[in-house]
Amino acid sequence: MRCGFRVETFSYPSVRRGLAANTDRLAHFVAARDAETVHLVGHSLGGLLILNLLSRPALPHRGRAVLMGTPCRGSHCAATLAGLPGCARIVGHSLREWQGVTPPLAAGVEIGVIAGDRGVGTGPLLFGLPKPNDGIVAVAETQLAAATDSLTLHVAHSEMLFSKACARQVAAFLATGRFLHEGDERP
Image (cartoon, rainbow, N blue to C red; front, side, top):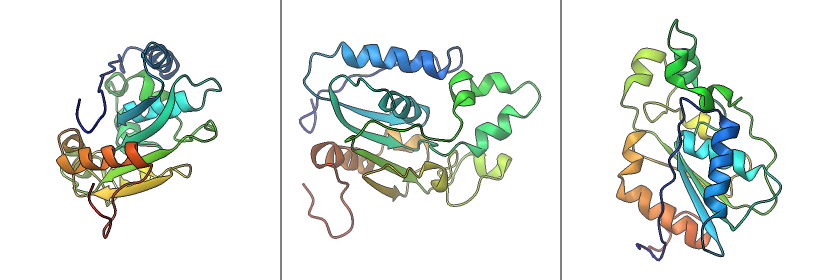
């Protein structure tokens, strides 16, 4: 337990199963938690599963949600890759089914969005990914009108998973519903 949160990991077959099937699995995972409140943190496609879950009317154990590097408005890299001969399977069913349009979300859900702007990786080189980006997802693709708060950190897409700055921001949002912005006191 770190920062006062018990952490559990949810895994899903993003290539073999579609968005609805993976969201059903996430709903069962959340419902099975022995806790009054369950906060959700998702990276990339995991954030899309969370958004899909938050669009459902009956949410068990509702808490806050943080999306990191999530292509809420669609993915330029995934769309380009899916359009190449023989590459659609690499993108997987879940991401191909996401239309880049967030479904209406349940009322009262606090969502924080973290984007990265350290554009290292294949996205800018192979796919002409717009700047700023995290190397896979453009900052503009992470924007979510329903977000309670958002910020951009100088991290690459995969770095978000190991970044102390991201972890500190996730913990701050889950605890308060707000990220730490310049000038804020550190917890």
